[in-house]
Length: 383
Ligand SMILES: [Zn+2]
Image 1 (cartoon, rainbow, N blue to C red):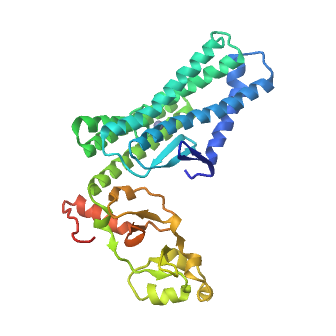
Image 2 (cartoon, rainbow, N blue to C red):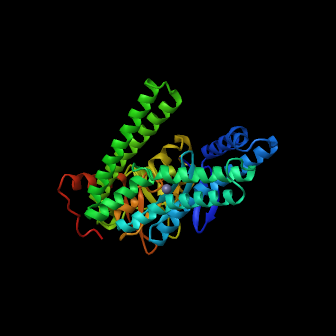
Image 3 (cartoon, protein in one colour):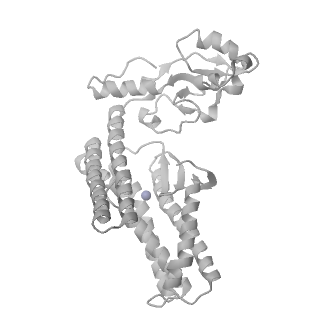
């Protein structure tokens, strides 16, 4: 889910949203205004129902955001690098670019999300009751009661023990806490998630075949399949993280890569650098020798042959702010899942403002293979 609209920073955390969420918000406003609210609190004007529907849809988005902010703020306090929050079709995603190494911290970071939803739900219900809930509530009270209901639902649903829901992650942290074995915890939690996903698929099929419930059945099968895929990929990425744990960027990088000046033409760069070496990607430097970007194969291919002589490298190179940068001492695991930018998966390794190395995706996959096949040996003396 890509971010289409940036909402700026809240508590120092970048927040953005995907258009799909606006569709969800519109659907919520519509179903509240035309169905849920008129039957809960009859006798109001349609303008009043629509106002309540739109305000509730907005407050629902704020509730989703509160859930994600809880994850991100606690994560930040625990030293995890938070990339930002994206709100989309299925709710929110907090993106972290580093991991916590403690199961207790991970459990806490995970649990505060559903907890926030449950507390918000309870608060909305309380305020609803204070405004006269019960069997014949007024419009304000009925609206608040729906917000209470949807937040409780959000909290409970997220606690289901299946990746990528919070409950799956919580289960993994708790097993990790008990056994001290993170990889085993991941694989047990992933299996439980798979069983859960299969049950959901079976339920969906049964409710379609036995009860003729087409929409609900398809929805359950779809959700089950989504959870199944997530559990599999969680297990695989757990294996990779395990294989890479304890290895630093300095041990994997190719040290002292050749740098190309960014004020030469693409034609020159092709002959003097690309064709003259076995590398396809070159970090670039500006006129005074400062690191300025990354010249990639894709960027070179984008320049038409007859435009090569008149195009400068700096016009086509991937700029520094879209290349992922690491320091030599960073754990390699921090590089997994970094935003791709235009660097074709390359990471530049910078120490005190100076380029000291480069890492390509194949460096990492080679390391994973070596480690998984039991011949893990960190290359020595590469600093
Ligand atoms: Zn959550």
